Length: 184
Image (cartoon, rainbow, N blue to C red; front, side, top):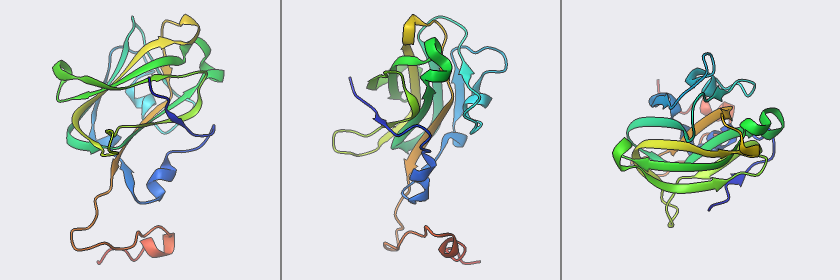
C-alpha cells in the first residue's frame, strides 16, 4: 500500500504547471468509464469544476480508462471530497498501466481516509523515472462506509516537460517573461 501525497484542501495541481516542469495531457487522451449515471460522466470529470463529478452506476470495481498514444506520465491528480460525497467517496484505489486492457499492471494501490482535496499520485518507478505507457486505468475497489457507487470530482494527468535539445535555458515563469519566449 502506498500513501499518496495529499495537498491541503483546495490546493490546485495547476501550481505544478506554473513551475514549467510539467504539463497536463488529459485532453490528448481517450477517456472511458465502466459505468455512469446520465449527466455524470467524463465531461463532468474533466470540466475543471470541483462542484461536478462522475458518478458510477454499477458494480465494483468502478473503472476510469485513459488511453494515449505512447506517452510519458509523471503524476496523476485526483480530487475527492469526503465531506460532500460521504459513502460515495473512494477509500481504496488501484492505479494500473499498460499497453491495452489485456496487460495492465498495478503500479500503485492507495488507501484514502476521508480525503478532502487534491491527491497527488506519483507515477514513477523506484528511481523517480516517469512511466511510459499507452493506457492508465484507475479502479475504485472500495468506498467509505461500504458505499456502492462512487464520485470522483476531477482527474488530471501530468507529463514532464522535455528539456531543449539546443541547451538548457532558464524557465520562463513570469507573465512578462512568457510574452517574449517565442520568436514570431
